[in-house]
Length: 634
Image (cartoon, rainbow, N blue to C red; front, side, top):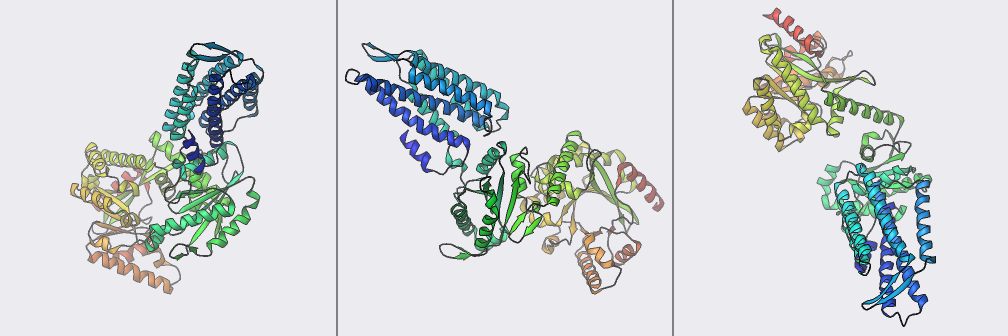
């Protein structure tokens, strides 16, 4: 027990109500064990010890047993309540019950009787011990069951159950067999279990920097939110993380984060948390929030100077995000959502050099994001997405031979139409993109099957792949099963992958593409020319078709002919020429005028897409459009 005490108090601990209670439990349990030994000594040498000493040892033994029992109850209950503090009525009941228990120790009589095998104590004081044990056991079971649904952490649930089982087991044995002194063993076993399972400090520490980890920050913020305390989160984020790591190495980054952690802890007398690979954070509580501007000035000054490591000096680009609660985030929000909000750099709309703070625009964006996520979730649950199709014109066949499938979400009650540019990134971030993508594939393939588009001279439908789905190992299996389910030929499906995904996704994407191409599907690189160009990748013939983004077309047709317009045309013309020489089919998106179309036709593009031909249109309207336009060509 003494070794456990030393280990516990020497290790760093996060500042939680449950930790404070556990610290009191550790001290009271140690004193309880000491008085237990003293009580045994007094009874063994009963004839030699004064009666006041015998009573004093019993009183000390029982007082610290009461404290230990009450701390075990309070600790488990606080965990069940997710660190939420007690209300005044609840606190009054706890205090009054403890005062009565204490009074029984101080004033209740205690007697002793001698038997052949030893001397034993009995009387009202001893009976009160058993009563308190039964009452606290019942209260612990009741409160655990009452808050059971609130406990999401499976490990914590199991530990609470095991603690209760030990408590009831040892307590029951002590009541049934009062001559057996087993309570000390029981208390020690319970504390050891609680330490290993619930209070092990290493579970809250980041092994690389020895700062507290993301889980520790989440737990502390849960207490702040439940107590409705004003506070601020300051997160220090290293900019251009991957570039920094490639340049100076992972070890140097870790050493620098350790230096930053030590500076924060020393300067602001607060605990530091590692939110992610390149971000440290600390909390400014309501007692010190008035001094936050001074803290930020000190932080900005320190980051303006290099960090001195063992064998080098490192200067890193960084910024500090500041989030005030409840001004920027409500008390009734979810902790995970708060941390996502705090980590999202785009959240911080107002930048003051090193410091970035929330502005009204960012708050509105957050509200809109929550609404969009709700719409996405409801659309998935109710299978209520709507598919639109934008026809693609073939210059060789002089008719519409392809189309791009585009998902649309709309909510009449809140924000109305939602653009894919908004909801797709949010769905990816929140883990909704896979079920959403599967729903899109089912809708598109069902539409293709029901309308037999081949008869209307439609060669294929283009469907966008999200970044996550493109590297999903189950993608080929899913595509094959869906195509068989709807009886669709693989060559009727063209999968679009954005240029940024194509460049960054690596081995898994290449493997999926190879398998699906063998099966008969084709691939297009979407948004080509938006900043991630990788010509060596295109040269490997992974993509049959390249879709040139409208951002490369529109600068060629500004009203005033400028040097920029001429350069834009030179760039576009050479890009198209290069891709054609490489044997790629070319689609140009965003064509809105006949002038643009004639210009691109003269350059030899394969397909044309844009409002000049048709905007994205609903399924029924698309079928009528294709039937009408392609029948004229026939």
